[in-house]
Length: 365
Image (cartoon, rainbow, N blue to C red):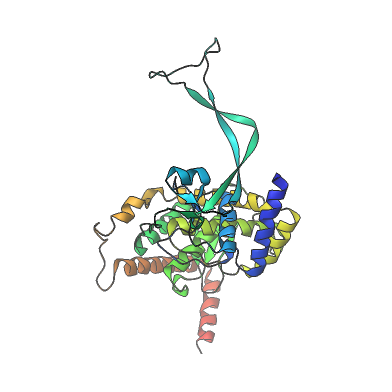
């Protein structure tokens, strides 16, 4: 299949799911012990960018609930077998680097102490596109039952999200209302108060979505579409990147995915993909960068699989009287938000503070 045909096939399937409301990033995903980003069953690695989206779209179309995929050869290598009549799914990946043998001045291969040839990595003059055909685990017999992944306790995944928020360096203010947004001019995020969210997971998913936008600031990943007017094609492209990144982060951190007000952007996304089918691959690649940037900020308190697996026997953070560790952790976040509000209020001119009090008094009548 030619590259253009492949891009048009992927884009057409995603457009159909956007119209039906079933595209991966417009569906809510609850926290779970099952991975929903497609991954290779043999290596355990997630498929990246556009391939991840394409496999999720394919799984939705064919009703696969298993996130595991592999090639025919990989299945044979673990004594499994693709079932008769099953057809695989084509994916493409770009190779930008290659390994070449190291040679001496005489053009002979250089060997290490064990006599093995040595290699060096070189950047290719022109990236090469390779294709592979993969099969879902539900198309393969002889595979073991999918194992549940270790899950982090709520307080631990919320701590991880707080670490990302703190390490981002992006100011976050909390104001009553129903709007969460990032302003590129001020490089700052405005959020509703924490108590307004149904669950802590909803709050952190929203905060990380806005931080996804903040990664586009010129001092970070420098995305050109950031800060464009609502309703413009550029605004829709930026929102597409942030939504896909939110989906990726949700799976990695186990906080779930709430697409929120995605309906306002669907028309813009469909228009962009119809005009340029490869836009979905560019958006997915940028989303990978966003997700990687944010999860790297978690290094101070990295939540590893090992820590999750031993959580049941590890000491639990002390709880203050009258609450569980999770309740008290969330309460500290609420108090922190209120402290920020008080500090902002104190910094406003006296006239503005009095006007705010007058409005509150009128509202209370």
